[in-house]
Length: 314
Image 1 (cartoon, one colour):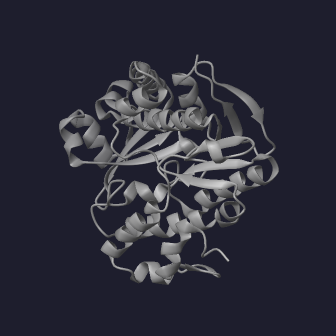
Image 2: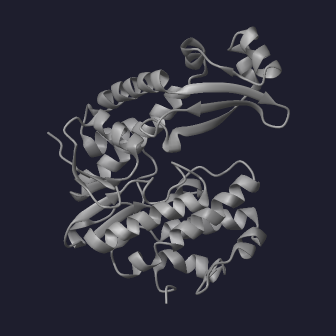
């Protein structure tokens, strides 16, 4: 029933999906390099950018978060619930829903391959395929369409090409502004254990961090960055909340803000390219979208709490 859909055909041929769903045992047995090649095969079926000239009705560009990407959360159930939320919205309101093919993010030809075959990689693959399979009915009905962004653009070049020259300056300022906001709102509790090493446990509200929390595994090199008394307390007292100055030394806010703004830029570029509207349910995505385009506004909040942004560039 779904084996005639191009993006699923490589997965059917390898036995990773069938009419009963996703074959997890088959995924776990498949060699590392074969899985990477399979990600390439799947990505080869997806057009680089969507062609809106062939679409009728309203076009919605689902954010990576809402379309089940691991960008916001890697947990499979969380990713599936986001696609379920998008599916409910699409069944009621959408003629066309565009979503990023996140399998391309770790494919050899289109993304950045994992360093090794480990539990995290296998978990990502199983969750990726389960989440993609969740789109099967929307794709078959001609509503959902996967796409990929060009692979050889840095963020600055991408923004200049698709949003206009000089846009990269606005992006740089937005990253700095979001970073300052994150430093003021995020509490960072530094801990240490023999198994995981140093952990930065970040907590805030959902306006700032997905789910209001995020954990970073830190390299031992932080011992050269943070004061010795801070390191000592992380070892001997079960952990320590970092001051603003020490949070800045770790540079966590720059990492979070750069990623959030990059996601917003890609969403805006696709919306402009297709004359579509951005869909997101994530409050921190909303903040990033507003930072780089002041005249974006919430035009509708649907019953599923999905936020719709109409794209306009003045």
